[in-house]
Amino acid sequence: DESRILQFQITLYGDDERLVMARDITRLHRLEQMRRDFVANVSHELRTPLTVLTGYLETYGDMADQLPSRLARGLSQMQAQTERMQNLVNDLLLLSRLETDQGGGDHAPLTLPPLLERVRRDAEALSGGHQRIEVEVTEPRRLAGSEQEIHSALSNLAFNAVRYAGEGRHIVLRWRPAGAGACLEVQDDGEGIDPLHIPRLTERFYRVDKGRSTATGGTGLGLAIVKHVLLRHDARLEIISRPGQGATFRCVFPAERLQTATASDTAQRA
Ligand code: ADP
Image 1 (tube, rainbow, N blue to C red):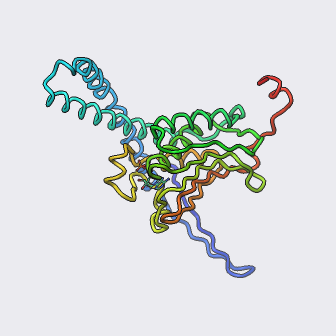
Image 2 (cartoon, helix red, strand yellow; image 1 turned 90 degrees about the horizontal axis):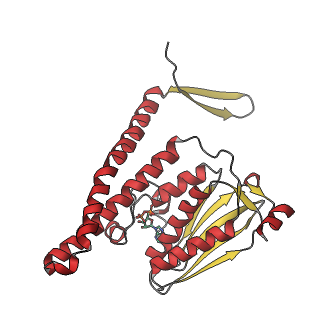
């Protein structure tokens, strides 16, 4: 009557024995779907009121110099908090889109250096010149991937490096060969992360230091977004870090995702 979803687990013992276990996960699957829809709907519904609030706050913000200073301070607090809410709603919407849309698809090959440069400039603006941020490209191939998604993954990693590494640090954005594939990497020489936390970092809202993360304007969804973008690109995330020794976030793409730039591409760009 109704289709069911089964999960099989096959365990091999020696050469000819296997244990097969089947589990009916229909209900679990349905609950998961409901959770996703709920989050997507709530986020969507929150967008309109936030837009209205932002509109009014902007109008009043223009008159801030005519307001008593206490009111003006309150107004700027309200602006900051609505902006935070907006970031949160946008990240939640992006995350549910990444979870539900069919991944990958056919993408025009992406040329990484301009994208890295764009993210470098945005990260520099966020850092206010307090960190040295560089781009290093040693991989000539292009990536079959969604420009928008790769951009948001890379921005999240770069902005995290700016936020958590601390002032006076050095941050490198790299596109380099890795085995037969290639790797998009963000490295900082900041405070690093206790290995205890690393396995859980890509969970939604997981933060090592909640207070600090909120103060730096994070939503707690950045690395969850990175993880889902990479899943959709057959790539994996490696996090290498030690306390006091900086952090490296590696997105490793398989060779099948890479394309050698052809002569006509090069001509087109010239
Ligand atoms: P958010 O930054 O919004 O809190 P993320 O999912 O982007 O959420 O990151 C999760 C946590 O991982 C952060 O709260 C922070 O504790 C830690 N983290 C991420 N990047 C770095 C980094 N480059 N150095 C140190 N800690 C980091």
